[in-house]
Amino acid sequence: MASVEFLSGNEAVAQAVRLARPRVIAAYPITPQTTVVERLSEIVEAGELDAQFVHVESEHSALALLMGSAAMGARTFTATSSQGLLYMAECLYYASGGRWPLVMMNANRALALPWNIYGDQSDSLALISSGWIQAYAEDAQEALDMIIQAYAVAEDIEVRTPVLVNLDGFVLTHTYEAVSVPDQLEVDRFLPPPDLPEGYPGTFSMSKPQSLAITAGPGDYTVFKYQQHAAVMHSAAVIRSVGEKFHQHFGRGATGLIEGYRSEDAEFILITLGSVSGTVRQAIDELRRQGVAVGMLRLRYLRPFPTEELVEYLYSSTRTRHVQNIGVLEKDISFGHQGSVSLEVKSALYEYASRQGGAAVPVLNFVAGLGGQDISGEDVQNIFLELASSVNAANQSQQTLSAPGFSDVRFLGLEPFREENQHQDAA
Amino acid sequence: MKKPEEVSNPPCHLRPFKRSTSLAIWPNSPQADSGHLAFSNKDWRNMWPQIEWQACNSCSLCLLFCPEGAISWNANRLPIVQEDWCKGCGLCARECPKNLIAMIPQTHR
Image (cartoon, rainbow over all chains, first blue to last red; front, side, top):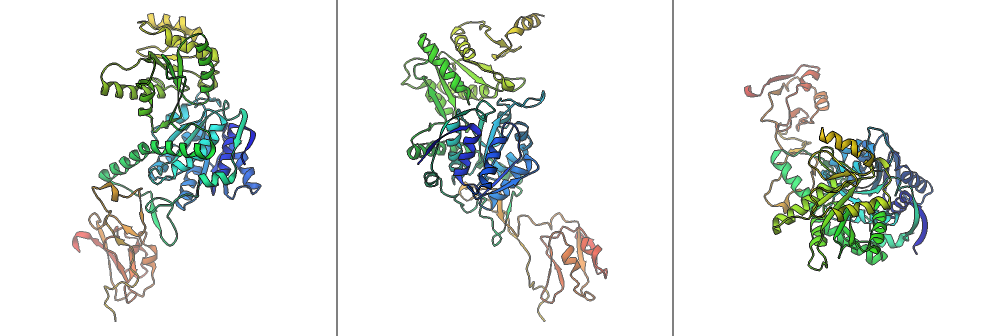
């Protein structure tokens, strides 16, 4: 029987990992990831999980060690954050290119400099092209569910690609909520031990030595990279089917790569990801009471990018209202352009518009929550009101500060600097 | 006496990387069974170790020091160099206590 426990996001992840029965865990501590591996070390120490828990000297070593473990067919786990994820960067590409089915949790945290230990999404978004499947949890329950599903997705014979499950630092990793923790038997039924197909890492043995991580020359390299791309594209279907299977087993959880909230008849849609979605839901309910047709699309996965699902949500023939304006709310800025998620969304919309003809829906980019900045319900309501007021407005209103240059990026919290900025623009 | 060309403990062999225009039989990940060389080294090697067998006492130092594992015993326990594996580095020549190995230009063989 499942039990309901009062857990933080990190503790929910630790419980999920315990239930997934990895054989090797390697980790290096970093705020705000530390409590995940603290709990796991206690779980291993108490004999509740039969795993090797390896204290490594760096994040780079942690991931390298897990590739070796996965080569022997072991299920593995590690977790990191921020600078640690960037220190791993080299190994991230190794792991995805080598097709090791690893699962890692990342506590989304700001990047230095200036030094900052609080949450934002700059770390994982910087590594969006590293070949890992990227998931973003909204709450502790989804974090637990996503970790268990991540193993099923990563180990799928047609996918064999590592999965990064992201939790917003502190806001999700350190806040407590009631979480349904499934029974071990139920999880065992859902997630059998890893399948080790011929020709993939995991079939390595003393009697059958293999050379892993081999060289491929100019022509061959492209074929390997194409295969990798095709596997990540294909993983979208596997993520959906694993989600549906999870739903059948445990009776909960979204199954798509995108989850909509009151979006079917919304004229103004905010696209976002991670824990801020809870605040967005509340702001939507409040504005709906005032008669503003607002809604949300929550990106649960950024890789593979769910272009088809996004288009279906925004342009479906079953919609009762056309979408007038879209906002993208993210805790990240790709310096010199705009937020990384905004780029993803705009790319998908351009593809749709160029295929269908006609113009894409305008997209405004809201950069908020950098370095742990609070995003209040009022902030989100203001974002929606700006979306609503900027329809057909040549000069869009300045609820938040617009970045200099040809860009629709608005930074939350810079309103007091606005006059100064306008002055500089004029000069 | 067995024929000297006969290798009693054959080292790894050349097995060209299997290319295909069909993805279905392309390797799933960049890994391969160990002990096989995808490309021969003979086409770019500059030097070649020429071994004088007459005075060899099979001390096995050349075999042990070879960084590529390119040297093995023939049926008479005399060292032979594998054509595809040797890179011509000359370590064997330097280590042979009896100076029986001469590094000669590959083109002069």
